[in-house]
Every structure is written in C-alpha cells, then in structure tokens.
Length: 434
Ligand code: HEM
Image 1 (cartoon, rainbow, N blue to C red):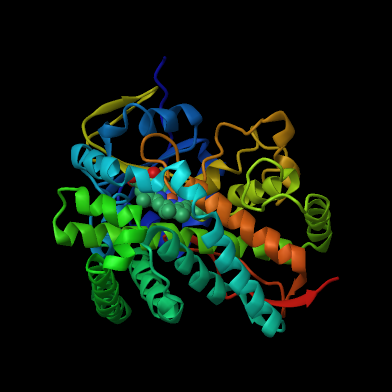
Image 2 (tube, rainbow, N blue to C red):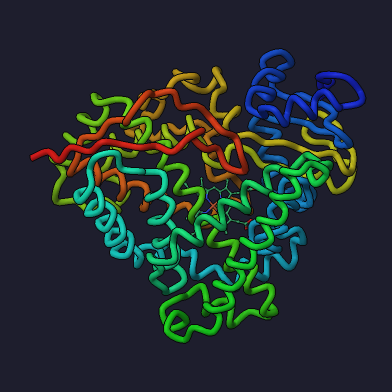
C-alpha cells in the first residue's frame, strides 16, 4: 500500500485548535474533515492527534493490532479518575483479558436473554408513571433512573428505585467532570474547574459506597452472574469496586442517552410514530425484546444509533511507532475515532445528514461497514445485546400505549460530553390511544 501524506489542520502550537475543540468538538471535527478529507492531523495543546474515519484505518487500529493502540489517553484517563481501571478504561491487555474472562458469562447471550422479564418489568413501571402524569413528563430524568434500575436489577441483582436518582446524579456529575478535564490540562486553575473536581470527589464516594455495599450483599450475589464472576476473579476489593462502577456508568448512561435521542426523534415525527405503531399492532403476539421480527422498529432504532450515537467519540494512543495501513504515526500520537463523523459519510449513506430510517434496508441485511455505535474489535461493547433489547422494549411499550409530542419549543441541539447529549431535558406530553 503506497504512503499517503496526511493533511495537517492549523498551526504547530495547537493552542487555537485546543480552544476550538473545547468550544465545540463536533463543529471542530466536522469542519476539519470537510476541509481536509477523511484523515486529518492536528496539534491540540501538547498532543499530536489524527482524526481517522476510513474503515481500513479503523479496522487496523481496533482489530487484530488493538494491543498496539492503548486506552492510556486523556479521554479515558479523565473517566478512570472516577470509574477506576475497570473493563472500559483498562490499559494493560493481559490484565484486561483476565477481567474479560472472569466477567464474560455475565455478558453472554443466554444471560441477557434471562434479563428479558426484568427489562419489561421496569419499562412497564415507566409506562405506569406516564399514565399517572402524562402532561409535561420529564423523559430525560425518568430514563436515567429506569435504565439504572435495569442494569442494577439485571446484572447486579438489586432493585434500587428509591436510590436511583441519587446514583444517576452522581454518575452525571462525574461524567461532566471527566469531559471538562479531557484535553484541558488547565481545567483545575479555573474556579468552575476546581468546584467540579470537588463535586466529582463526593459523587465518586457515593458510587464507591454503593459498590462496596454490593460486595457484601449476599442476596445480590446469589442473583448476579456479574458479582459471582468478580468473586471468582483474582481482583482486589478496590478493583472489584472499579468494575461495578464501570458497569453502572457504561451500562446505564449510554442507554439513557440513546433512548433520549430516540424519543426526541419520534416525538418530532408523528408519521414515524404511526408507522411503527402499525407494525406493533400487527405483530402483537411477538415479544418486544425479540430481535428479528421488528423491521421498522429496528430500522428506526439503528437510524437513531447512527444519527445520534451516544458514544460519539473515543480515542487511542499509539504505543510504538506504527504504520497504520498507509501513513506513519509516532509513539505517543493520539487517534480520535468519532462514530458521529463516521456515520455521516456521504459515500456510505443515502441520507447522511438527515434522520431517515431508509438509511437501513434490513431486509437486504446491508448494514454499512462503518456503522459502529458499539465500537468494533476485541474492545467493542459487551453489553450491546442487552442495550438493544432494552431500547426496543422502551420504544415498543411506549408507542403501543401513547402518542407523544414535545412540550415547548423544538430548539434542541447536540451537547457533546463524554456521551452525546441533548442540550436540555426532554419533556413530553403523552396521550393514551385506544
Ligand atoms: C446504547 C447503549 C450503549 C452504547 C452506545 C455503548 C457503546 C459502547 C462503546 C462504543 C464501547 C467501546 C468504547 C471503546 O472502544 O473505546 C463500549 C464499551 C463497553 N460497554 Fe457499552 N454501550 C452501550 C450499552 C452498554 C451496556 C448496557 C453495558 C452493560 C451491560 C455496556 C458495557 C460496556 C463495557 C463493560 C465496555 C468496556 C468493554 C471493554 O473495553 O472491554 N455497554 N460501549
């Protein structure tokens, strides 16, 4: 493969790029790819960064060579300050593998299938709450609580509804802090940065206290393959706490954010709601958590994961000098991989820049190779099957019962953080239909 010269954006000092990236990373990345093509190099503060979007580069970095590209990056370091060094942020391949093996059974397809009724139970709880107060229902808050209840019940063997708000608020505080910190070496010098640091520490204590309690909870242990996997592992108690907090963060926040976007898109399009409802009514014998009968529902769900990917960016560090297919990267260089940018490639998608369910023709099983909401390769998301079951169940049970619309003005926008959020809470009006 002949060498390419990767175009460089901006100057050599990287201060201007750092400020632009901090201001709005989506706008920044979109701009540099539009002006400089699919692979762009830029300096950002002290970091040398490549933003890569081509499938062959991504397969190289995330595939068989993954050990040469570490998670010892500013993005993951920020996260590990509160979730510790669990599966998601773990840097050393050999000890990551041991953890993966110990926890593997709890992420298996049969284990997730067993969670079907748990998921349906919690989603029904939410539809009952909607029924009780259908006007101005704060969907964002409720989704955060209920997705946390699902992870805790399905994977950790505990029901936590009364505590759910406190725990999900603690996670939110920590995530916001991680984002403030990532790629901003000077964050602590500002009063808001310092305050955020203090808030993160007390929220981290809330999460650690919850996780420690779980390690002593015999009833939870009996119910949870995850806790049993931890018990059989060689991990210290502090490392077990890290794994539990990782599960809480990775398993609930991404799903809540994805669902928030999905309900936003549905609430903005009553025709789409009707179409999906027709499918639900004509297949009413089928379970919403089964995967293959729901053509329209799946199309919509995939389009939501394409257009508004909650994990909209992740990064890797080059461990040693490396030829990445057709360009050379140096040890210490950072690689940014943004599903948000990648999912808008006009070569791959019919309607790259609009939310359009026709981007997916599932009957032909043609899912473009660059569709990667759950990442790819050995470090891809082990919870994706649970997440898909969960999202499908929410969409199904809510659409089955209600029509819904956005309360107030539809002036929502992206708020990039560690995950890609709506810039304000989504409040919906529900009307039960016959
Ligand atoms: C819509 C929901 C979800 C999305 C979009 C999502 C996305 C992702 C992505 C993109 C990664 C890989 C990040 C990287 O390569 O750097 C990841 C990793 C991970 N996810 Fe998910 N996830 C979701 C739900 C879940 C759920 C429900 C669980 C738990 C049951 C979970 C547990 C994890 C864990 C433990 C990792 C770390 C894997 C490793 O590095 O070995 N995720 N997720």
